[in-house]
Image 1 (tube, helix red, strand yellow):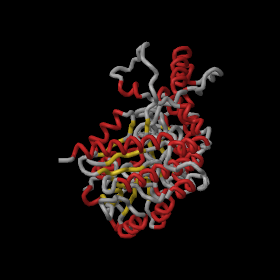
Image 2: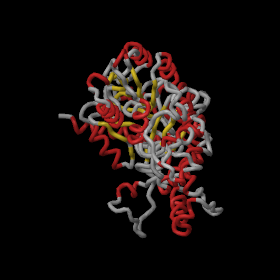
Image 3: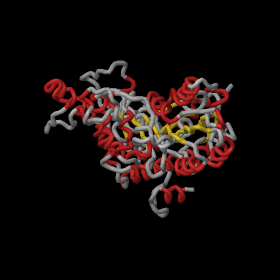
Image 4: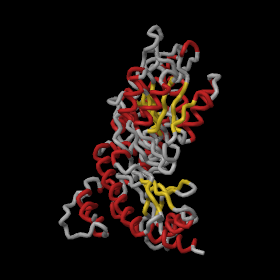
Length: 478
């Protein structure tokens, strides 16, 4: 097994280093071409996490960094974010309304009027899209409603399509949005929602074959499919290309919630011919809690309604910021949408919010999703191997419910603990400055983000976890 670990992580198997040693993890970091990106982020220290106030005291001793493996819930703050936000405040303070239009050579930001377009330009390569297919706008659930109102147009008459296919265990935002959209059309969610459930609830994976079979069974009634790019609970990375192609072959529109996929996996939304997608930017994109989200609208729907060519544009909810930029300030009240996804924008976006989004996206544009995905596969596989070795020493204490095929998962492993262990394990991890995510009653989600996490951190996490499991098991003994 040691030789397999070494080979899979890019170090020859005849190396003298023990693949299950700290020195081995350090050697992986030494050869990591992305290791320098870690210095672009603030890593909370143990003292930061435990201090009851946000303020630091002058007499405090230096504290080691925490082990933060929770980027799938909230990404760490880029160091440059403060500079970008300060630039916005300065631009607003000194230029007032002229800050919308005037280029400032000493500012990292473009004029406020164009900051959303600049963000879309930076976002496009992260999701594998044309620039005009992306808009940075709104929030995840609001954007989901905007897109569903455009793409879900059910009809039950004359053999029409009216149902929506989604996961039975979808993230609540998706479920609530779909359910309410169905109700708004006067339909019954109990009849109109086709729910995908895992064949084995203990290992809740939705296999591509099962999804395709379900599409086939309901194709004549399906108006829309909405699925996650990466499933939040298991970390499963869906085969977006195959599922999208099959949906189209059956004449069904399909959208993707990429909240856990953006900045995580190498999306190619344009090449895969996805109809629409939406995502947030506070997880792997590191733009801060509740930061402005994004949408993808396939170029086919950017202007003309393909089903009714007499329409001037594909139907959607309309707002002032989606109006043609050249005539927006003429106040004609004659809506002419901007081409592409930008025509789906509603309100004037928060330039303050976008400053944080742009700061993070700059970092992504200094590398590529292909490079990040390559490291993600390596570091997550390394975590898996350490956990498997631990499982041999502790049979029956935990198992991994994330797909074992690395191509079928993002930068996350979901570990299910034996009943009763979770709270005790989390207590010890917290004491040791290890931050992961929990899902009651028994799952921890561990997400080594390739931009800032290290192989040494993964090794340290596994050491702490093993002690935590031992202590938790002892506490549960009669």
